Image (tube, rainbow, N blue to C red):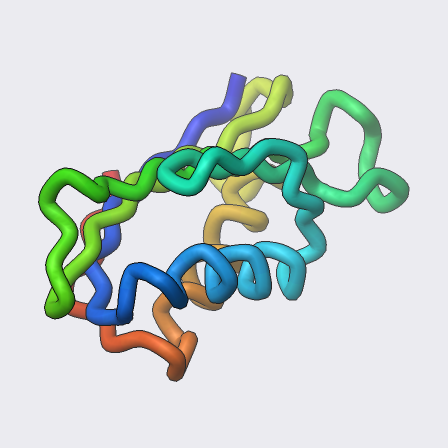
Length: 115
């Protein structure tokens, strides 16, 4: 199973974060399938790759430490594909979402750690 993680700290009002995340993930061809406010799961839109390569994104928003100046998010992207190559489909989608989050002008990036 391919699995990639990263951590973001962004400056954005907490009320706006959820909608901005939904918009960013949908722009990257993901459908939101579960959302509790502090946890969000999205799945890649089927049709471009085989079912086993479809990527799932999980975002955990740390509301316990959130302030008006900073909100921390943990992002995990995974699929059933074995990561036999560095440039696999899951990694490509991880790079795409990571870049979309970094380039989003609706928030200010404070910290980005890819793990």
